[in-house]
Length: 128
Picture: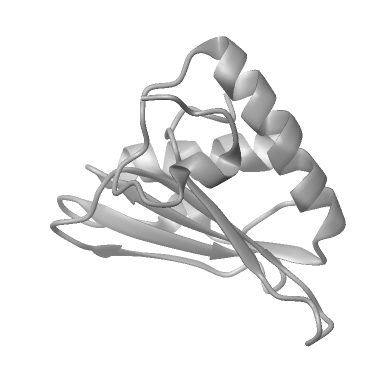
């Protein structure tokens, strides 16, 4: 599968395996969107809670301005969907079967005239 831009991920159910050169290119494109946004929300689809939490922490580690509260208290059995909101710092996790796997990142704006944009799914280890 050819992945040359973030738009190439739009119709995928699960994140594809990406080469380092692809990750570097996509990260550069994504970072510009993150910097332009007022805040982001993150959705993580994972086979277990520990992988979802690890992916979320990798984002916070890469971007010190993106933090969440009570991450270490999260727990859920089986496949999960984790949702984090940078603006509020809130994060929650729930069991969810039948989802793909990956990170969905949505750039949000305070002005109603700006439309939010969702990118992904990105591999769970994209930000490491």
